[in-house]
Picture 1 (tube, rainbow over the protein chains, first blue to last red):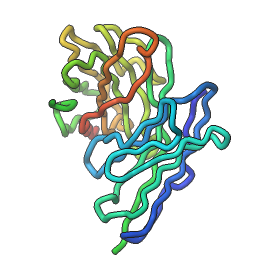
Picture 2: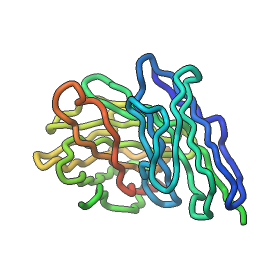
Picture 3: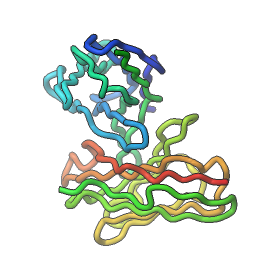
Length: 115
Length: 118
């Protein structure tokens, strides 16, 4: 079955520092991979997606992610973190289920940004 | 273009009651999915609807049900509420493109309905 692991439950970075959030997936074929962000009391906002092609994908808010098939990873990066980036980040893999489609989410990584 | 709209945003119920949540997808999106989010279990898939038919279902008891209308709007219902049903219920929509890419794509989420069961 498809699954996603986010090894880090909490991460703290200083404002202006670089950020990398880890994501590992388990999936037999080429996966559809996503990163979503959730601010407190809000829904999920799509940061970026990977379907095929270039393994380095650019997203909104200055985020990027790199798909590495050999490592089954899809890590999220940002060169310089802003205080407004503090939120919960979810990695997800798209899976065909019965005659439909669903996302399997990781447990999330909570990002704290310090001054 | 308006996003996914969910109502109500917050509600409080007592054990044994039932609740109905509503979702209006992005215009042109034909698939609606529902997810439950709790601190312990994280984000879990409930079901997906397309063309007024349930296409797939997650591992939830029969107390959780849903439906979709001809305008793609969807409702989900939880009967005989339990304390453990307290959660954020998120609705998401996607295009459901024709052909071999029907089961692909990104989901666009609403802000959720926060259900508290007392």
